[in-house]
Amino acid sequence: MLIDSHAHIQGKEYAGEAADVIARARAAGVEKIIAVGGAGDMSSNTEAVALADSFPNIYATVGMHPHDAKDVGADELRALRELTSHPKVIAVGETGLDYYYNHSPHEVQRRVFAQFIGMARETGLPIVVHERDAAQEAAELLRSEGARELHGVIHCFTGNYEAACDYLDLGFYLSFTGIITFKNAEPLRDVVCKVPLERMLVETDSPFLTPMPHRGKRNEPAFVRLVAETVAKVKGISLEEVAERTSQNVQDLFAI
Ligand SMILES: [Zn+2]
Ligand SMILES: [Zn+2]
Image 1 (cartoon, helix red, strand yellow):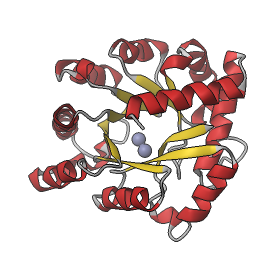
Image 2 (tube, protein in one colour):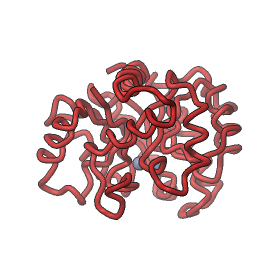
Image 3 (cartoon, helix red, strand yellow):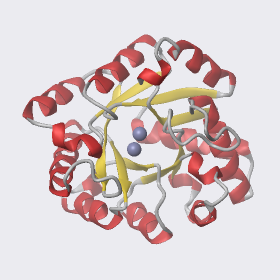
Image 4 (cartoon, helix red, strand yellow):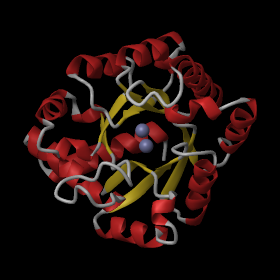
């Protein structure tokens, strides 16, 4: 069994196709999918929850992507806090820092990230973190906001081994996407080789980051198998072992 630990299948890219996408995932051995809210706008959260309500093997998270941190005020935080009480909402996020695209000012991203860490602490839910070109600040902020007492994952990890160790020290899991299948990703595959499987998740981040050999097409959760196969190859272990351990990690982290 595989689990896609991070996908945006509630998005408009799959309008009217969710049932087919979920069926194709199941046929590829992907038994559960985490529908991550907060990429785009507030509706991505309610849509993730609606999907989790309709399909027993889909779970939802609620938050707001750092790109859109500038749109998060008291009303949005209140609405998201309310959604966390839904039984199939299993984490806060995605949230974090993205200093590559800079769609929201850094100080706003930091403020909102700290607020979501606070929400995770209050609700006792784990946190799904997006971080790009901001590893040191994200790790510092997590540390200063008491994230060590939380559980969480750094999704779509693309940093170096030093950054990986920083997050592992905080007790976080690291999740890898189809980027590890790309030809030029040799440095990231070296990180995959060194990070213990016990602390690793796999994800698609659908509809983005489609793994080889489908790169250029829309991504979907069935393709998480290609990510897991690459982890297996890099580590010199079986696909079964990767599937079993990463699925166990997802279930431990999100208590599903
Ligand atoms: Zn992300
Ligand atoms: Zn995402």
